[in-house]
Length: 355
Ligand code: AHM
Ligand code: MG
Image 1 (cartoon, rainbow, N blue to C red):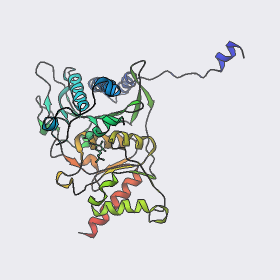
Image 2: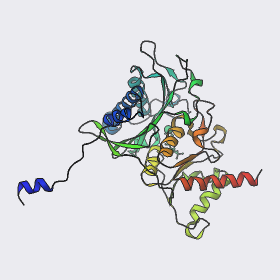
Image 3: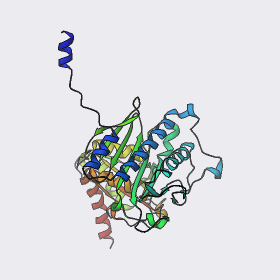
Image 4: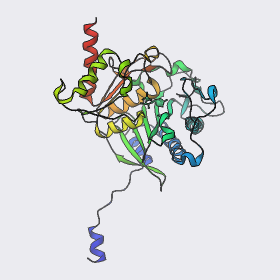
């Protein structure tokens, strides 16, 4: 084969579409405005910095607890890791000065924070879980950043906590960045869910899946089964039937996965289907659940619905839940549409029988 025939045989490589180009094209198509586009770019840039810190691990001195004893306990009553604090600081610093936001709220902070007076204030509110899956940081398993964008209510210039209490249907953008073998940003601005992989040499997020679709049916579920004895009756029955496999009422064998990083579990579901659940249990019932509506459940539910999946508390569509507090917790079922409907049906049947 000659050099020129080799050249002819080479596949035509499609130009890479960076996140920047993708967002500019979305803006031209009228699906995102300039302010929201720049806001997403700033969040993505912060995620790159967090990705670098996570990847350094022990070499960067970033592993372990943030402080000793009480000093490391956050608003959630959980011990903060050094990387929780680093990720939170990176997101706060990156988003304070851009002029797109009126305020920020973080899973790691007691209250929301208006943009400081020294900077111009914009029209949006940003909520984030800076580093989800904290228990996995020190053991080198995937963790991630989750974010949600709301509009600042009309006429509000200094947003307070109550200005953030909007249902998930009001989100204008949501996404997560998973720090795994690859760093992948998954984004929706309400027109499909799209994945961008970080090209570390170039330093850009490159579009790798346009329009992610979650298969409607699945044979895979994700739950922390060690909580089984604390679950409500309908959850016990639902998982019991999944485990009964081919010989049980569901008539098929199911596989189980649990990473204990919601971002990584949801990423698998967006990629190949499945159902993710963190149900109500008697340990977390007083708080309403384990996972947080505003920082975890709502952004993930928006992404999942935009990819053709479903998301529920077991009793209501997640995105329609009216938040009552910034740190409100909820039970979560999300993923393949038919499987979420099946889980909801167990709750419906139980509630109808006990009514
Ligand atoms: P975090 O935000 O403090 O990391 O907690 C949320 C995480 C989710 O990522 C994950 O699904 C869940 O907690 C794991 O909980 P458990 O340790 O009970 O399995
Ligand atoms: Mg979290």
